[in-house]
Length: 124
Length: 235
Image (cartoon, rainbow over all chains, first blue to last red; front, side, top):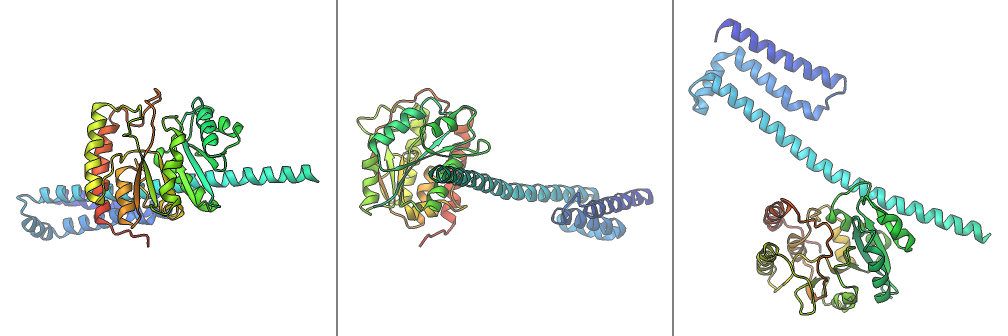
């Protein structure tokens, strides 16, 4: 890895880390969604900084080139993000369904209460 | 005296609803009626209100299963002892309700399915649907250990314990058919089947149109598979 490549990769990792922290600070990103981004940017930062670690990891996963390991890591990261979003969406779908059902039930209760109030007024 | 609720899930049923409500009232004059308006774009809700029926309206269309569960939640909150669900499109014959309820009233079953495969029924499904029904009928019958002829019928009756169980998040809102029967069986409920009359399709929009049958088969196999892997006993 040339010095230029290393510097570029480190800057990208630092930017991703910094932007993620800034988005959490300004409440545009919730902490729970920042975990994977922060972990990945940190992992990539240290793998680029200590290039021999990336070479070791490449041998461990059986890849030929270190770049393959990096792309593989990126794919795994994206997969984890998508799974996390799918799980969250499923949970939110259930929550929205329960809220809508609750809304329908409460609306009915209000109608019945209004009707009872009218009948009481007419009776007095 | 046991309190009975007739649950009618309805989506764009302003035309058929008056007849269904009138027929149900004539058959079961002492029962309370509930229409769950599943985000209809027509006047389903106002038609039901004019008929003097309790109405629960979803803010948008959420599907048949969600509409049913909203009804179960209402029945549970209001303390009903028995529930019959009948479709709002007029395909189910309300005169079959007494037969459907009998095993639940006699405490011989907790959940009763109204089978459409009866000599007096004019229901004639397409070949593809017939094959799908046959497949799930065989599968469910094998898994619950009793012969069931109609696992996709929406004409059903149940008692308060089943009503309470179906208000949980474990209720399969996405097409509650064969997987629901397996879920109930595994939860320890007694299931029975009675013959009911069902009329031919009245030309309304089917919830099994387009690519939905393919998704239905996929979802049902997945749902049955994961239901078998779960332990979700009620008692």
